[in-house]
Length: 83
Image (cartoon, rainbow, N blue to C red; front, side, top):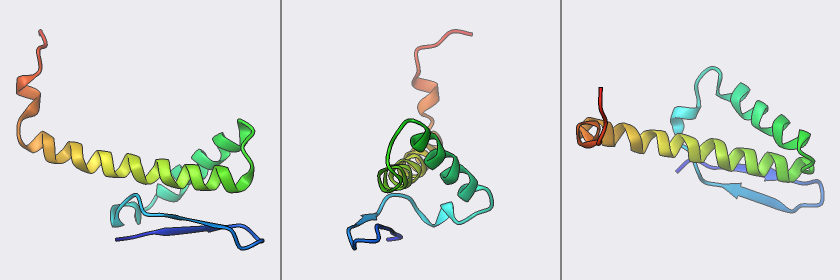
C-alpha cells in the first residue's frame, strides 16, 4: 500500500495511507499543491494543511476508483431520473 509521510521539524509526523499508485501521474502534484494552498489560505498551519490535503487527495482518488468499479456494473441504469 502506498503511503506518504508528512513530518514537522520536531519529529512529529503523520503517515497517510489513502490513495493509490494512480496518483503518480502528471498534474496530481499540482492538485495536491492547490489543496494545500487552499487550506493554508483558510488559516491552517503548514503541517495541518499538508496532512489534511494529502488525506483528502488520496481519499478522492480512492472514491474515484470505487465509483469506476460501480460504473462497470451499470448502476446508472437503476437511477430514478428522467430525460
